[in-house]
Image (cartoon, rainbow, N blue to C red; front, side, top):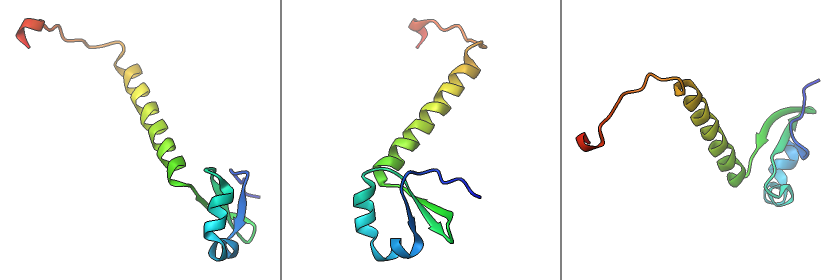
Length: 81
């Protein structure tokens, strides 16, 4: 059985019939869209998606900082800039 990574689920049929109401009830949380009782897709409100993308960007930045923490470093004279 497939794991459902959401606390709120709807069927594909229900999503087609009640899209606006489902988004309202989800209240900024992801919605698992089920097809034959299996997750087919996840519906994310725009604000939730934007937070996820910002979080991923932060993780990528942190990884880059860790990779560059040990150098190599270039000595720079501020007067030369």
